[in-house]
Length: 341
Ligand code: NDP
Image 1 (cartoon, rainbow, N blue to C red):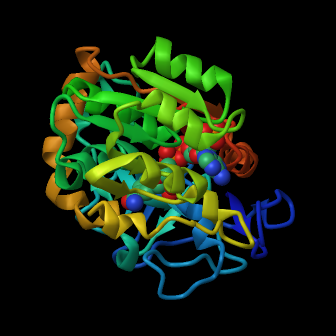
Image 2: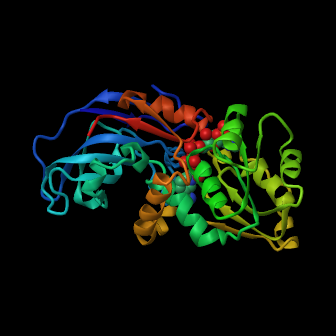
């Protein structure tokens, strides 16, 4: 087997070879009762994995332990099973280890069995890590449950060309909102405007964030979909209308900083009667999954929304692509392909 092993807790951006390394490891000779063994096909590269490197016990997701393989969302095929819930040949999605093969004990197996039909589906398998995986679920579920979107409103999305952001923008657009996004390169801004039909977009790295946002939203914003926190949240609070809403998906600006950005205008929350609501997709995963897959598959096949993704081949590339994506390298969903089905 080959495994990406977590070696050391980083202070800021993780370094390949220091904080995680690829190692040859042994496969167990025999499964115990309840175990399954998967041959892994795809891994989902997600920013929340960075938080799990910090070693904070009792956080909303368990932290990584030194010497163990990294784990996260992925797709695999069951090749050995001592668990009747998961017959050999099942295609599964859920938390697997960053390894060629994962041994999954019963305490850890809440994997979803994907329908056999997706083997012949027109939808690429990698999309089940992006628009049809945890990322798409996050966008779909959070908009549905927390954003209370109304046609004609203006929504501002940060990290808008990231895996979650580009889906949030497109889903809000198809519901008749005016959609504004920010991203960290001119190339991303161009894709938002020209391919994804955002009404306005700006590069938050090359101009004053508040001024760019005010220019893009001269009448203010109704909803801020926050993937970033920090200075973009500060600017959004300034530009939000009275009774504006903020849906907090994440605060990636904070993940690799030793000292968090100090937001200076929190007083606006009560002055403008702003409603701020955070969520974790695990809370609604089970409840929303069936309607989410039905709706989003339909929207994708009808070309209503598109899934932008960057698929890199090889388990050995997972650490470096993960770090590069934290730094903004990805246009859309970052996926590692380990093997063909
Ligand atoms: P991606 O890895 O696809 O994209 C993240 C993007 O964030 C990067 O590409 C980069 O693009 C941008 N970024 C990185 N650092 C900063 C920074 N300091 N300031 C502004 N932008 C930055 O991530 P996802 O789309 O999967 O995740 C987006 C957010 O959603 C994250 O905060 C994540 O933790 C959260 N999330 C939350 C979930 C939940 O259940 N609450 C579930 C899934 C994700 P750029 O070039 O624009 O800088």
